[in-house]
Each structure stands twice: as C-alpha cells, then as structure tokens.
Image (cartoon, rainbow, N blue to C red; front, top):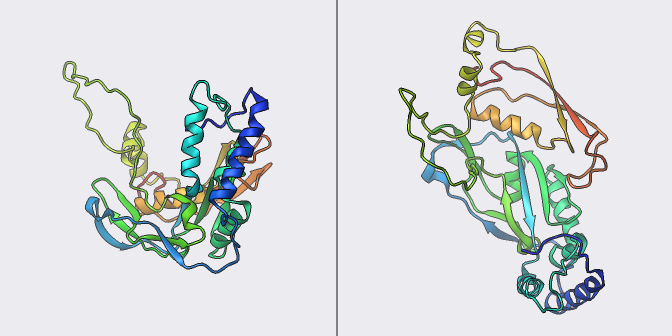
Length: 310
C-alpha cells in the first residue's frame, strides 16, 4: 500500500505527480462525466445472511443506521500497482518518494464533481452525508427506509445465536456513473464483529476456577451482574424518566443516534431521541480544527431498561 505521508525528498514529488496525471489522462478520459446525467443502476454487491440467522421480517423502516462508502478509481489499479512497485524498488527514480494525501486523491479518488454527485444522490433520499476532503470515503446516516430506496435493496431483521441483527438480503445498486468508483459499502448489516489477530495461548483452569465460556461482545446481563445492578433493576430502579448527558471528546459522534437505535432494536427497547449539541462543530469528519476542545453533548431521556431490561 502507498504510504500517505509527505516525502522528505520534495524535488521528486512534482515529477511523480506529473507522470501520474499524464497517465491518468490517457487511460481514463471520462472520469469527470457530468454528475447531473441520469444514469441507470449498476449492482455493487449482494448479501445472503440467512445461513447464520433466522429471518424475522423487515427491519423497522424508521430504524436509524449508519453506513460508510469507500471510493477508488478502479481504472487506475494498474497505475497504482506500478507506482507501488517503483516506490519500494531501490534504484527506482520514485524510490521512497511517497505521495501526499492531496496527490494521492488527485490520481486515485473520484473527481470532485463525481464525489459531489454522490453526496447529492444520497441527500435526495433525506440521508445525512459527512464528507472527507480525500474523497476516498463518504459517511452516511439515515433510516432503513431511506437506505432501502437509495441502494434499491431490502434490509431485514434476523435472530442469531446470541442477539438480533439486521442485514440486507438483496444486492446493492447505485447509479452506473458512481458504481465503478465504489469499493465497499459498510453498515447495512450489524452481525460482523472484528477480532484482533492475536496469538492466543490456551489457559488451563487453576484449582476450582473454571474457564468462562466464550461469548460475543458483553451483553447487558453480563454488565448488570458485573456491577451488581440486578437487584436494583428488579426493584424498579432502572433510570426511567431521567435524562443522561454524554460528553464525547473529539470531532463529535455523528452516528450516536444510529448506534442507540441499533442497541435498542437488538434488545427490544424503545428508541431514544438524541439531542446533539456540538461545540466548535465541523461539517465533515476529517476536517477538524481543534480536537482538544471539540465535543458533543448528547442529551436523551431514559425510556427504562437502558441496560437491556424493559
């Protein structure tokens, strides 16, 4: 992979970019096609999760979810591979002359016009868009109904071994002028859990201490037991009617409403409405002027059973 850092050998950067842009103009003359042109739909990817869960029916159309789309100009794959080989080949005129983020995007990201057309496309369905200056990804927040329409797909609910989850059961479609630039669509399902690739050593029990059974991420009942909350919840002290304020340091959590909705639908709870107040807000996820003072105050009422107990 090309490391996106500023080269310390600055004189080589401009010739590299000039060569890349020259090749780009030769192999991809139509990458700036008009974003306003009506394009037919093209398939992106499909999903068939029924093998790991039992179909329950359609997901609630008003369920808030968050997705992220990855972009790359796939017509430049050969050029990318050639540049990677040259950058890491001793003796090459490009050896260790890494592209800056701006130079990388100029060659391998969709054009600003095409990226803007993607933003406009999703906004036309009422979906909130969060852009990135690299134009290599686009974050989206909306409802299941909105994403069903935007991707011409169907998001369904399933029951798995440990929890309920949602996933799209039909292929994903986008306008054909956008589809060639899309490398991934993440977030239309929530049953995938990422596990670190660690070299684990088997631990034998000592004395009478059993090895706890493996389970997916902590469930509400696990946390209730760990913090001795079960008796309080059973006595009716579940926080119902109270408001909670969360302070999130950093750029502000753009997907907190979707995350809470996902948690609620998983455990059969009412979906809380989040009132977000952002300090020194930024219109994008990437462009943040002062991470140290940025924050989001999320104020939402507790509907009861915040930890999974209705």
